[in-house]
Length: 42
Image 1 (spheres, one colour):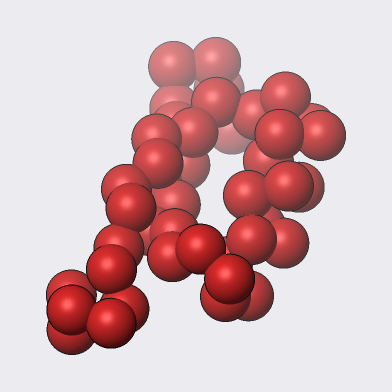
Image 2 (cartoon, rainbow, N blue to C red):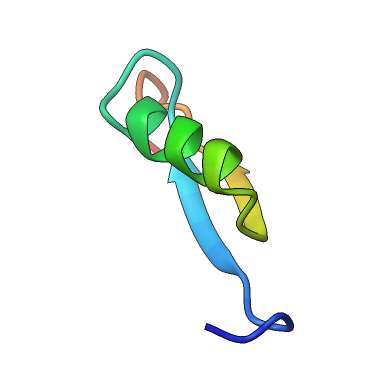
């Protein structure tokens, strides 16, 4: 992955995507975060 590429993470709190979010933070990888409200059916 080059420096100008970003990962898009669709994240909902208290779900398994939290692990991916922590991993991206630890790696210092560039990413875009999109919050998803699972209770609202998004």
